[in-house]
Image (cartoon, rainbow, N blue to C red):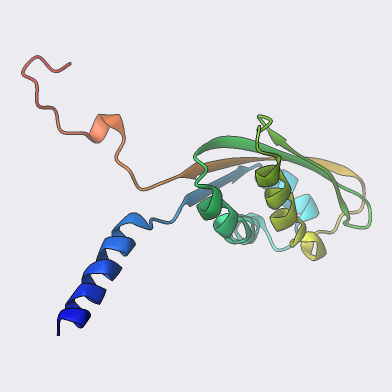
Length: 137
């Protein structure tokens, strides 16, 4: 019985600290629909799904910009992440995750695409915190 209780306690403790990273993808609908025939919503879902493991592994937070080019045949090239990151392994992993989507792209001409990525956790913002001071600082 003690083993079961200790296992349950460890699992509940671990799940409390294993929050998933939320990935918000922002892109111009017209620009994405030129190169991604499944539409903007599917693009957001696919990109966020591909980046989920990397985001959790690196515990990255913040806003990034992902720029890339799609040629006439739908090939992806010139993938860049801004701001530039000190840890090149994170950048390499993001590019690898993004390259998994390469079979989904089509285009009749060369297009340059820019996508906003926002990585966050489920923490409360400062505006939602409980104010314990009387003078509202």
